Amino acid sequence: MGGLSIWHWLIVLVVVVMVFGTKKLRNVGSDLGAAVKGFKDGMKDGSAADAPAQQVSHNKAQDPNTVDVDAKTKS
Picture 1 (cartoon, rainbow, N blue to C red):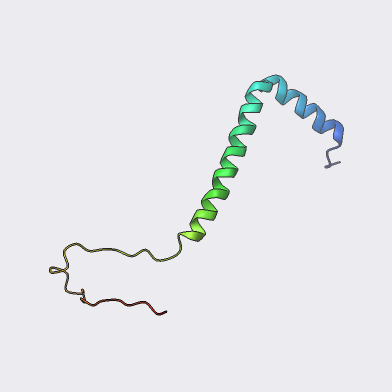
Picture 2: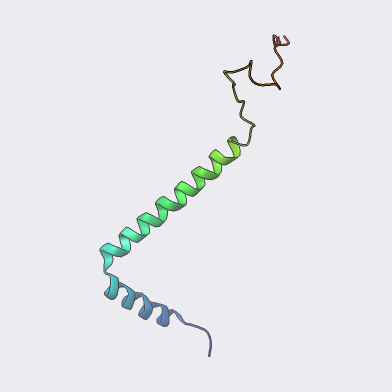
């Protein structure tokens, strides 16, 4: 009592297929797969986007925090 055997799961599967049809279940499966793929791609993009973005101010004269210097790179 309490456990479901393979026969119970097969009966549930047959009822679900009869209610929804195979075409609709196939569409649900492909939609779910696309959602998982999109989530994985979003997680990859999220880790790359953690780097701080630089903001460029075109109105340097109005910004009191602007320091006008020439940056040089180290070789």
